[in-house]
Image (cartoon, rainbow, N blue to C red; front, side, top):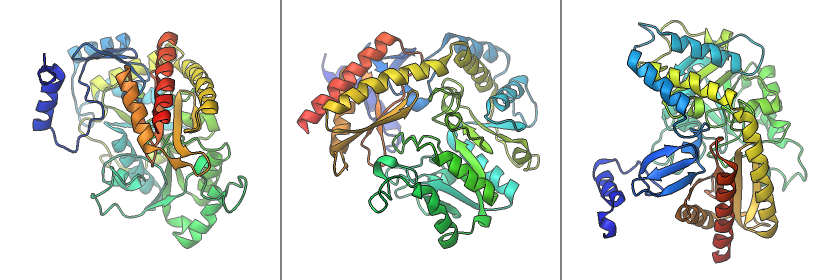
Length: 439
């Protein structure tokens, strides 16, 4: 059988003829089925999934309790617009999200369909609650591809290039990217100049009284799995409190056990005013949540927020069972175990492979930054692409990230077995060594 006659090739031809060119694909793989941490394609090939649908599948593919909950709900109610005819799963999941959000304040929740929608609504709520308009985001941030979220996002290509002009009243400030610190060349050591910069910012760029909210990923995702120093997030929260600015934690990728806590912000002991979640909230069903302090969530009047499909009955049923699955199987602890094992092996690799410039992470959210030279830290984008390619050829599916596209990001399903983890990490190590040798 020739290559052109394979199922994959035929499907790729159909995809090219029917699907918009802007919808990219990096693997050429068509999935037939998946379970746990294993993907099976239409040719019968198996792949270890080390990207988990870009953080959507912390509980793995098709967890049985979630599938059963979806099936049961599908037999009872597929859709009702909650703003007209309500249903209990929406209320029950909102109650659960309120109980999970960090901090002791009274919380309330609304649901949408995607992470970008969650951020859009968080911005709307913050502006309505504060009667201010400005929004601060950070260099390296990714908050979505819609008009407002694209404006808040930092990486230009491919997310923003050619799509301007962007939403007004958004402002970017440097993030705490310690490996590539903006300030260390001028100020040796870490003086937390990324926090001190705000005094200049509020004088030179925009008055703090104009800012409604500051939004930040506790660990930057697309930006390169950038973990801030211990003082950074508490420092930002203190600045927000002193200026009457709402603190929005974007937990779309970091939430639901990924970092060893239910939500990443808990690692820094910070209570957000508003928190956005999506991805692993419902094991692959389209669902997102905006959860926040009741005083802010109740600021908009009835009908000001919402949407036709937000909090769909199937998605809410899946969300309830997904959270129960995380809790029942202690997946937060499992994330910490996965992270410990992975970090130990990658740190050992870093000692013998000079292209590994930095290894960083929290829990099972780990990034490997590859460089051509450790002194200059020149990004090794081409080597990174080779690593992804070589891993795929050996049956491990993972993806890259970073504003320079030189970070391997690991989002391993938290249900991965020890054997699968060991096998996948071995392939990753071998692929990095091979790509580094070729240069």
